[in-house]
Image (cartoon, rainbow, N blue to C red; front, side, top):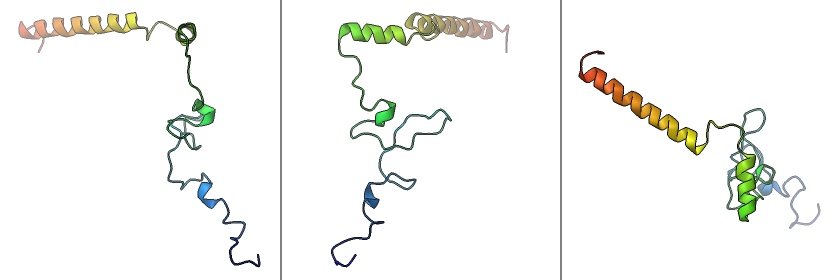
Length: 106
């Protein structure tokens, strides 16, 4: 480069490269290997464009119902199951407390 105002080609775009030492916000998704995604998160989002940063999610009531139904693979995390587990754990705590109080268990 003969001109004084031109930067060498290696320097052009250095500030916008997303290498290991890039200080900006990263995507919070996990890759298939279990390591964090190294791509930059979209502005105002927590994910990159590959991991749902561009998604706006379902907007209509029908879309929200479809999304909720699609994410149910089993009943272990359903609201009813979580409430049932909470009730069972509360009963176990209550019974344990009574047994300790009455001196049956230390």
